[in-house]
Amino acid sequence: MTKKPMILTAIVLASIILAINFFPTSVPVPQLSSLTDSTYVTYYKKACNLEDSEACNDLGDVYFKDKDYSDAVEFYKKSCELENSEGCNNLAYMLDKGLGIERHNWHALKLYQRSCKAGNMKGCYNVGAMYFKGEGSKRNYYKAATYFKKACNADVASACNDLAYMYANGKYFKKNITKAIGLYYDACDMGEASGCNNLGYMYEVGDGVNKNLQKSERFYEKACSLDDYPSCDRLEAVLGKKIRKITTKEDFESAKKACKNSTKGGTMCYKLGLYFEDNDDKDLALKYFETACERGQSQSCRHLGDISK
Image (tube, rainbow, N blue to C red):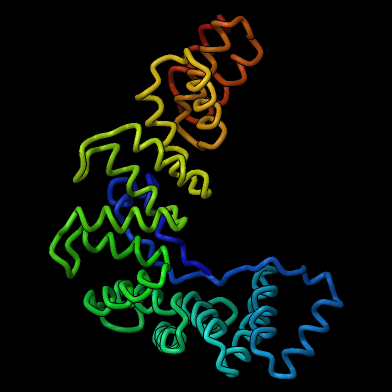
């Protein structure tokens, strides 16, 4: 369960953009069969009863995916009792969020620590997140940084992202934008959307770096491809500044992708409408104008009004 991966995005915009992702790591949902596959469940339950800790944890994942949180807790608990570090991490998440069990941050922290001590780096990251937020313990940036470093060094992308945030904002460390950018790059390279989003924002507004809309576009596009929808919206905004009018195939493809993936703004949808209008495809033009208007693009709404006069 990756906690809401610190997806700093336009979601929380400026502050968001360098903000931290701190919801402890969510329980991973592997590609397992559905609960409707009774044969699968039966055999995994037998394995769990025979004290196979991985089978118990996997069953917890399946029940979690089906939102049967109370049963998920029972299997995670059994897995953790069998000294499975992933099971302990996942049980801690359930306690931390109050899913299928009464919420208790202190117990969650202790379980994350147990998971970390057993070598589970996601558990280490979650310990850092708890100390950063002051959940289950007093806020302690030193301990947060220590655990983030440990997890980041083990290639936990969210830890690198959140460590970067601490450098960027002078939390425990002396503010160091160069160090922050390097860690955001590491996080982004490892597939952490928040790291990509944060880099996109920094290059968009020139926060510690020279403004560079091409780089901003590249990082927002990567974050968007990782299903960070606020980054999709920022991508559309950046393209709106860069592409004044669609004149090339490259512009056209970029605009289509941005319009398709964004959820608000509508700038590129509007420009696609103008493109199709110029090319005498009224049906497609209206489609894009309507989409843009629905997303709050005022020019599209006004243009639709002019068309209907």
